[in-house]
Image (cartoon, rainbow, N blue to C red; front, top):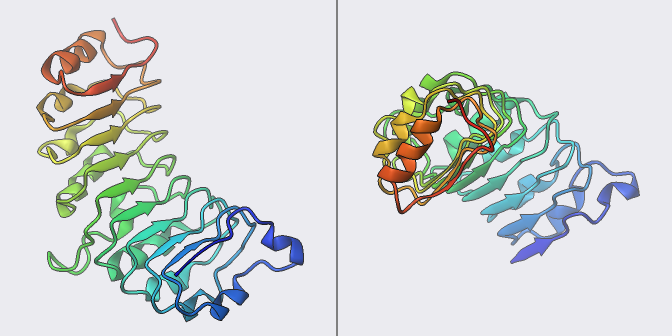
Length: 231
């Protein structure tokens, strides 16, 4: 079963939680995006839940999502008031998690997702990871991607990343969004032979010759270049 009540002004009733969700115990997919919710109290009743879109609310507490074990898709983007530390239990306890979107939540870096916890047999099967505008600045944090061998799509736009040293060896990526970062060197991308789509928009510190090199070495890749580059 699925329920789509995104952007339906649920908070107009004076409620800021999901108390009524317990009336639908068999739900597997739930969209409650854009409703001004502060917490997800009530969602713990959905024992079969696999997908949840709770983006663009005003969430301050999602601790109950950390109690689930079979979530496959979680979208919390736009909940700028949500403490980043609440994301790690969700990732750590749901090994079948395929899609995670935490755009706009200040997690600080990939290490905050708890990927190093639990050893090699306790890592999610993530294929798509959205961590744009999350305050990430340490390029070495990309080393944690080694713990996500199935990752094909990565969005780190709008952060403070100035180099891509930690991306070495991550040839499994198919889509990569690096836009709006203070990058000054992108030669590491030459090796990504399987990359289908690359966004470097607004990365105006990147040398022009490296942008040309990317397009020469990766002719199959659709590259979005910045409007200007470093001569």
